Amino acid sequence: GESVGLHLPTLSVQEGDNSIINCAYSNSASDYFIWYKQESGKGPQFIIDIRSNMDKRQGQRVTVLLNKTVKHLSLQIAATQPGDSAVYFCAEITSNTGKLIFGQGTTLQVKP
Amino acid sequence: SQTIHQWPATLVQPVGSPLSLECTVEGTSNPNLYWYRQAAGRGLQLLFYSVGIGQISSEVPQNLSASRPQDRQFILSSKKLLLSDSGFYLCAWSLQINEKLFFGSGTQLSVL
Image 1 (cartoon, rainbow over the protein chains, first blue to last red):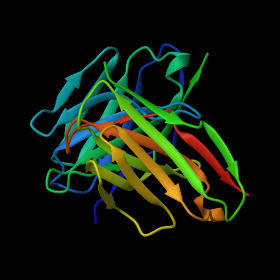
Image 2: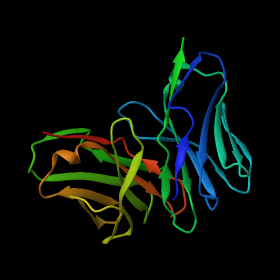
Image 3: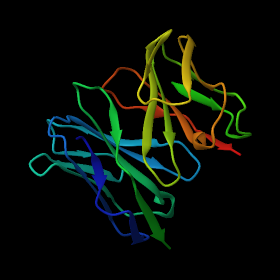
């Protein structure tokens, strides 16, 4: 069945370092991927998205990479800051269902 | 710009009591609307979605119901709450199916 999962439940990085959060998906028909950031007690916040016709997309301090061959998605955060501490979710949408499927989330901890 | 409002932020209800959570969206017309539930430390589970007034699709059998009495209003209800209904409830909207969702701030529901 469809599933979106993350490789590691918790990632701890030093302030100023780069962070890489990984995500694997199993549905090869998925064609749209989104990263969300969720701070404690708040709703998920959209970070960046990428469609399956691309393999890289950059935003402000964030980059999403998509490897369709191995069905892998990653979020890179440059110069990680304490405010980046949160749970990060990847999510996929398959056009034929139109439903957003979330992974379980990775907790990013930034050490000062 | 579009905004989404969700209330209350926290709610403590006894088992067997009714529930009504409200969500409204501003700044857009005919949005797709969603209700998600998030268990502690877990991903998001889609409960209901709506593509128009009076149109509700249920994703999982449960003790809850949803209604959309107006274009930009989405309500989550229950006649009698169960302990298992406790969780973090999130409302979201999107411009179209297959597009990214924007989430409200969530309601933490505790059923005691």
